[in-house]
Amino acid sequence: MKIVYADNNATTKVAPEVVTEMTTFLTEKWGNPSSMHQLGGDVEKGIELAREKVTACLGASQPSEIIFTSGGTESDNTAIRSALASRKGRRKIITSRVEHPAVLNLCRNLEREGYTVRYLPVDKHGLLNLADLREAMDEDVAVVSLMAANNETGVLFPVEEAGQIAHEFGALFHTDAVQAMGKVPVDLSLGHIDLLSVSGHKIHGPKGIGALYVRRGCRFRPFIVGGHQERGRRGGTENVPGIVAMGKAAELAMAHMEEEQTRVKAMRDRLEAGILKIPLTRVNGKTEKRLPGTCNISIKNVEGESLLLMLDQKGICASSGSACTSGTLEPSHVLRAMGVPFTYAHGSLRFSLGRYNTDEDVDFILEELPAIVERLRELSPFSG
Image (cartoon, rainbow, N blue to C red; front, side):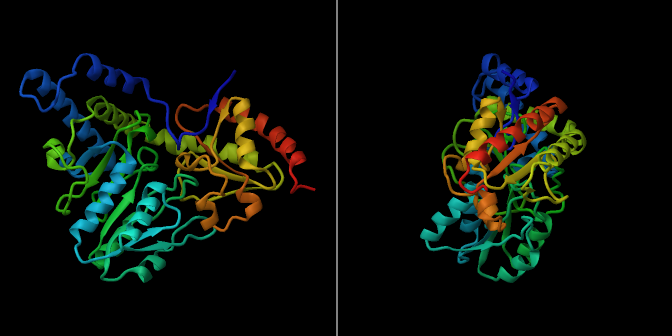
């Protein structure tokens, strides 16, 4: 059966070049990077080269600003808790209603610990109004955490400008850039972003590896305490194969950035236009300020889980939202924050394309989806 993978915002295919790099550090260069012997030293060199590649991809000023972690969730937790620890006496956090669960659920836990959290709204397009951020700021804010790109709609937030506002009030600024890395340019040279989270499996690297950027001069408290690894900022023996693989994936992401902005975007636009020919459909977050491969569609009077199951039977892999919240029958918290009507929100689909997708993939989706929608509407109690 033909398989069309259109769920790249959930995880990406590991690039063959990345697999090769990983395999070398599993079978040949397998020493402990903390060891004094040559085998360990060779591995340490591999880690530092990977750090340089991630630094370049993010536009950071120096490799020492990059800490390797287990993924985006650890990076988010580390960043926000570090910001709170380094801003003693400040008890407020500002974030948005459409953040990834890694940030939202952490903030809910912090509320139970006595912190105050302000959740900023978005408009019907999923866009953030910086005036709302400025209005929420005061001298009690320790950290502002706003995502660079939404994982469900692909909508981009003005994180550089938000960082400037946070700094005016003496707060630190963190952004979850897991979805943005490798898809849109990231430039940390302006200094408005203090902390930034990324993950390897969104850029054709393996799962279980990520990184946290910590701006030089930004006070930092480690989340995982142990040995001297990562200059004492993240204890535990390094996941060497994952780290070198993420470095290679970052290098490839830079090389393919223009393709993301052109060919992948063109496929996304064609897919979107074709789906909108189906009656009673809408695009969520249809704005130029979004990721080039992300298309979030709502289909009225159709249940999203049934859509996914029937698409899967045809070999089409898509999503109803964040992979980290799958299994729930509740409409997406992102779409609810955008005010998407209930009859549309329940029938939402996220197609996220990447550089391994083809025009034939788009053709296949457009051939199969209309008949699936027609069949489900015939069965829906809301139709008619």
